[in-house]
Length: 77
Figure 1: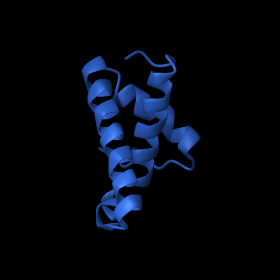
Figure 2: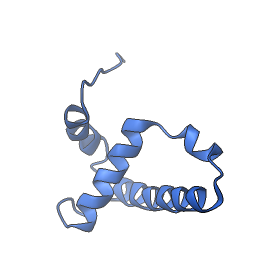
Figure 3: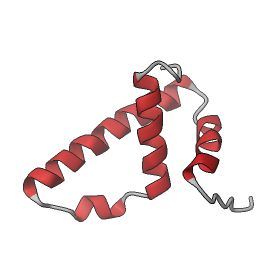
Figure 4: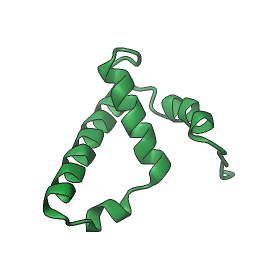
């Protein structure tokens, strides 16, 4: 399968939603995004940054946006 190139997050997010069209997948990513937020809060509080270096930017941004859209009712939970 060919690698896709995205020039912006706006280009990437519609593809991301199609890849997470099943409600179970969205729920797992919602929980994962919550864990990332908790890890970020922990890292800020303790100044331990090692785990944050492993996160992929667009994937995290997709999880964050989908988390927010699900919380607002824009994407079905």
